[in-house]
Image (cartoon, rainbow, N blue to C red; front, side):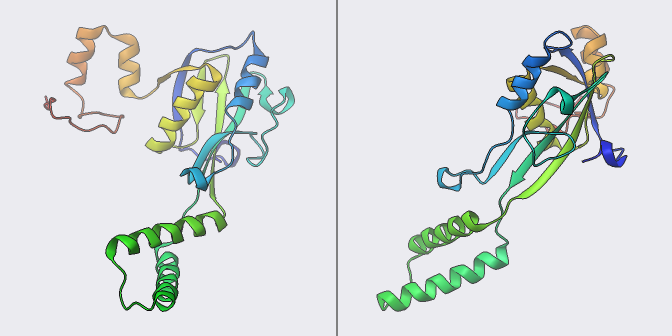
Length: 214
């Protein structure tokens, strides 16, 4: 969560394009389209992400009364993930291996076949697992255009920004050092300013083959 529990760790953006304030229903419709769905292990998905209601991360019925608290817009971003602990998987694989060898009257199983068995066991256990749920408050001050996600995880931030753009029609500019510089400087000035900062400050990036540190 975060906002509701006075947690101070959050990421900030400036909203530079959105359906608000005129088109509230468009935002509600976007929250519905982007709400979190179920995990389908059978098609290879062991995780899910999407929007939920602010004060109840298990609820996905979005109404004006649980989203709009003028001048704030409140909702939640949730990420679910199924996992099988390595120690648990090992025990079940060993049991399944022993049963298979006994049934086929073999002493050993080829490596490829064993890998396939391990993956099948993992798949079966995932179908029985309960997902770990991570929920993060989202607070958007429509008056100032500032939006906060109460998480600093790079993976959460990336997924959140992507979904905001796809489903809510939001264009966001990160309010970190690089984001602020990009909004105030022209291209030449930005390049000069970035040379004065630690590499990839605030972005978590890394060098590519054709990049060099200043």
